[in-house]
Length: 82
Image (cartoon, rainbow, N blue to C red; front, side, top):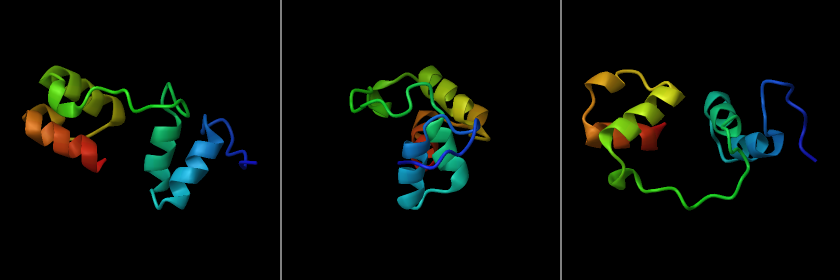
């Protein structure tokens, strides 16, 4: 059973699994707190098929700095690194 990390973490089990994989506390918390945290995935549209505006919005949602000056390829790279 996953440890309760308080109200700041929406999906404790996913948070712990991500931390076990070596992710930082900040990144694990950001992923575990997404709207659909813990739901099965794999159906998301690849970054290359999204518009620059969609990539920009996702970068904004997760707090990537400097996103307004990035082109589409740079946004994709930043999203994959974050």
